[in-house]
Every structure is written in C-alpha cells, then in structure tokens.
Amino acid sequence: MHLFRGTGVALVTPFNTSGAIDVPALKKLVDYVIDNGVNYLVALGTTAETPTLTSAEKKEVLALVVEHAKGRVPVVCGIGGNNTAEVIQQLKEYPLEGVAGILSVAPYYNKPSQEGIYQHFKAIATATDKPIILYNVPGRTVTNILPATALRLANEFKNIVAIKEASGVFSQCMDLVQGKPEHFAVLSGDDDLVMPQIAIGFEGVISVAANCFTQDFTTMVNEALSGNMASAKAIHYSLLAKTRLLFAEGNPTGVKYVLSKMGILENVLRLPLVSASADLQNKIDIAMAS
Image (cartoon, rainbow, N blue to C red; front, side, top):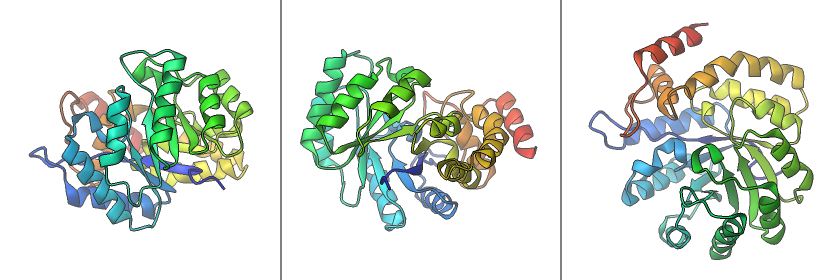
C-alpha cells in the first residue's frame, strides 16, 4: 500500500479578521478533515495561500499542523519554487521532523526545458532523504513536466515516490500510469477528474474539495479504489457541480466561503486573492442546499 494512496487534503490557511493566522481555526480544520476520513494532510500547498505567507508564518503553520495531527495521519509539506538553491535551503531550514514527505511544484515563470526540470528535481532529491511528490500543474506554472521526464526521475531516485498530476490531459495521465515503476504513485490534482483517473490507474488525490466536502469526497475515492465504480460514479456526479463552483473565482476563494458557512473559519483571504463575489456565494448556497 503506497504511503500517499487515497485522499490527501491541501489545507487552506485560516486567517482572522485582522489578517493574522487563525490558530484555533486551523486546529479545528485539521480535526474536521481527519475525523471525516482523509488519509493524509498537505500543509503549505498552493491552496494554503503560501505565496502570501512569510517564512516565519510558513514554519509556524507547518509545526502547528504536524503537532495537532499528533500522528493520526501523515503530513506532507509543500516546498518548491523556481529557484533551486532556495528550495534546497528551505529543506534545511524548515521543521521537517514528523513530516512524511515533500510536495514540490514544477519551477514556474522562468520556463525551464525538460532537462532543466530534471536537473531541478535531481538536485532536490539529492538534498533530502524525505519522500518527494512531484507536482505538475501547467495551468499555474506554464511548465509541463512531461511523462518522460517524470518517469526518468522516478526511475533514478527512489525517494521520488509520486506525482500530483494536474495537467488534465488524459493521454499524459495514461503514459504516466503505464510507464511508472512500482514504487511510484500517480495522484490526481484535479478534483473533478479523480474518479475517472482512478479508473485508469491513479492511486488517489491531493484535494481542495476535501477541505469541506470531506466525508463524501473521501468515500468516493475509497469506493473507486476498491473497484466499486457505480457507487463512486454516483458520488462523483453528486459533487461535480459543487466542486466546480469552488474554483469558479480561483482557489481557495470558493472553499474558504464554504468553510466559513460551516463555521470552521472566517471568510478571509490575503491579497491579491479576494473573497467570493455575491453572485458566486449565491450559486454555492443554492448548490449546497440541493
């Protein structure tokens, strides 16, 4: 059983109305998602608004999540960027005791070649013995980790153990599954695609929707992984419209609104992100009521 099989949740970072990290709300969220069935937590992913956190805040959030999870589920830490040397320095500085793995995004903005991507992750894999999950999200980074590059890394470095694949390109997804070594898992980064992706061989998801639709989402993933596709499909379609609304005005705009309605946190984001518009709030309210 792969360590990162099933449902990982990319935790949001709650802020209070003054804009500071809301520690009680973060603890409440951690308890909620664990109690409702997630297999592991991901701290400091994109959903956590990490680009707007200071270095001290990132370390605070990570330490808090690890401490409050208290060994109940593994914790993955997002450490990535487009400056390879800086990523390696962060691997040395961050409080990684008790962290089960690293999620590292493809270098963004400076648009490296496939060889550059390979050398970037080779340097990271050499700098740590922690299990590494590659993160391919070309819609955000522009850079696309092609299957040949991901599989080259997976075959050469045993601590590169998975990829969070969010290209949405099924031909690319199938090439990853077909060519992967046994120790390497292909995970979904697209909440609205995870059910059909499990059908073609994915082993789970790192999810945004699992912050708020936790029980239904984890049940869907577990049913699909168990081969109960009719049950998984029914849940998938019951969640589809609501899941898409979460991303209608960017992430984590929608999910923070839903979590605020659930009483878990304040509906506060840091610029340049803003709260959901009145129109989106209304659409989410109608979808949730149904």
